[in-house]
Image (cartoon, rainbow, N blue to C red):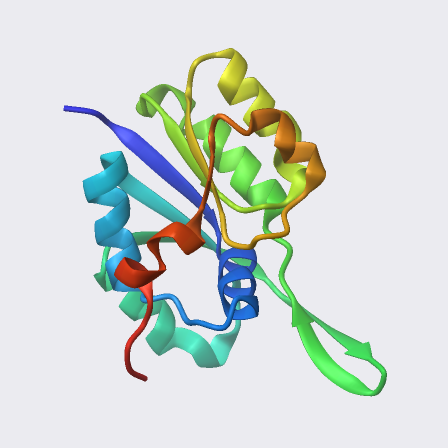
Length: 162
């Protein structure tokens, strides 16, 4: 039985899918990861906003291990926006868990993960890089053998209702 772990950049995933005009069903995505890629543990890296407790409880109930990062409120053109960059946490946890999984699935199209993906590939620990957007970092093109676009699975993963 394979023992693979997924490491998911939630904002990159959510914004990437939304930019393609659909919403991801996180419950279906967790089952998909388990069935298709034999993912035993799925780490979801997410900015922590106090009012979102119900969302976090739901994500944990459907099988994600949530790793929270405090968010910063920033002002862009007079509009308040929250930023919760989880890149360092995703890299750190992938390495902390390194000896506990056979292969890693990275869910992000962010070029900041280049050195992590390169390390996993070189050490035969890389399963797939699931990119959530047609446009992803050109740095990742080197790993094209491992890249799969989530759009291929839209029919299985799209949220059908609110």
